[in-house]
Image 1 (spheres, rainbow, N blue to C red):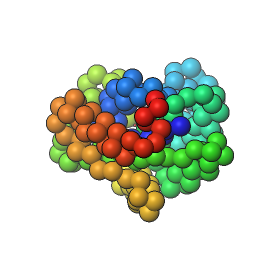
Image 2 (tube, protein in one colour):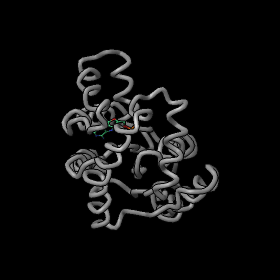
Image 3 (cartoon, rainbow, N blue to C red):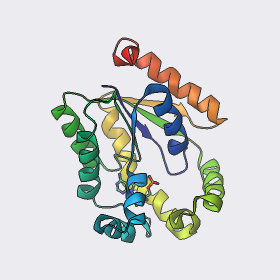
Image 4 (cartoon, rainbow, N blue to C red):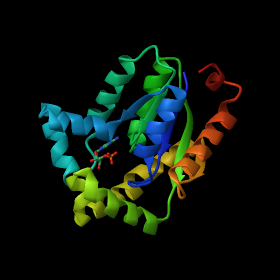
Length: 199
Ligand code: AMP
């Protein structure tokens, strides 16, 4: 199995690039944001619980998202690998993910960190708010909170994986295709000798 974490702040392009990467490498896309929004649309108990956090720009509790990811990983034993998007967002989630994958005799191959300057991020989020229909995009206060939560709780996840030499910085500015090419180059370079060849 070949597992990637696509990492970066809200607005860094994780969703857009995930779609292209799963198509090219045949990976299962696990976006906790998408999974939570689906639960919210379906008004499930989990969705109702998540809504109260998402609408404040806060993180949904670790045990909720870890449970969701664990179920999704269990449900796809035959996959080439997983692309994690928007997860892990705390060090506790990263540790839980590592444990979960090691039980399946696999691990994270690389953490691809999309680097985008703050001015560009704000510009993208203002644009996304016009079409996404997401309250947490449209409200500037919620937006500010999400960026703060990213800095305080999610950035330490990069430091956690740096200890294992798994983080690769990717320039997240430029055209969608340029960024995609940079991601593919890294994936291919870091994994030529391993499973990516057999995908
Ligand atoms: P996203 O679509 O990844 O930007 O996520 C939207 C919102 O869902 C976030 O602001 C959080 O409230 C919640 N969320 C998504 N993924 C996670 C996660 N891994 N841990 C906690 N909360 C999450």
